[in-house]
Image 1 (cartoon, rainbow, N blue to C red):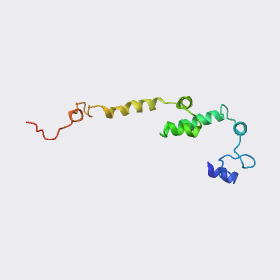
Image 2: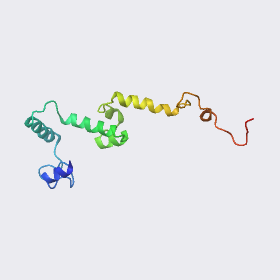
Image 3: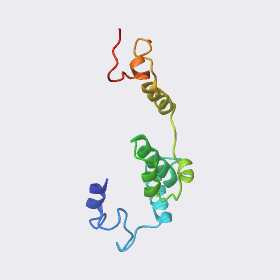
Image 4: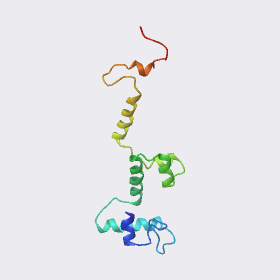
Length: 128
């Protein structure tokens, strides 16, 4: 996206990805919202906002397993509770999280208890 933007506006990305009119500061949130509304109206898209873009970007970072503390820093949230309201959780993510706990189980792939996991062999003892 940055390469397309720099083709359109060569000074973009030097200091700000979306510089203001004179390149000395970034565009305001009101300007960004207006630009987005006008662009969406020109292609007949409805229900899109800078807020929905923000939610999508933060959720995408979460989906890519970027640590939440990093996402909070990037998004300007001072705590994880504020960030939490922006992130969407998909049912498959919940299922994957629960499935990942299987590696903690002492039961192996065929359903038998793997006693070596539960009771590691001690040095110097022999089984008779």
